[in-house]
Image (cartoon, rainbow, N blue to C red; front, side):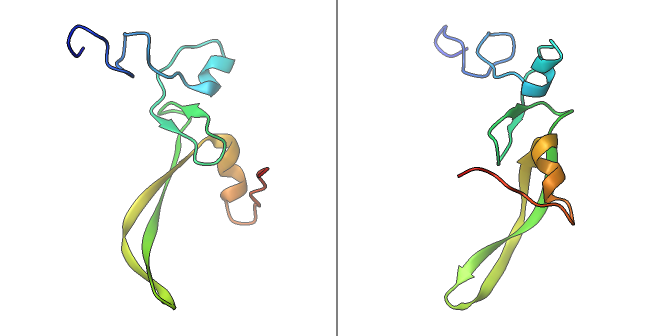
Length: 91
């Protein structure tokens, strides 16, 4: 709480976002991430985390590796990202 008011996302305060997949199973679980493709809120159980090398553009040359970064997806969007899969999202 800040100045007697609940902080957005504080567990137990009624303001936290809940996992979309758990809600389909009639369970209430606080979400820890948002899918980078579809925007669904996901809990620790349903989140899929991939580490990729972030690159900084270097003019016309290939990007310069900077550091590893995390990409969060839900289980539904993760499947098409695997080798041999295809990501098809409406724009």
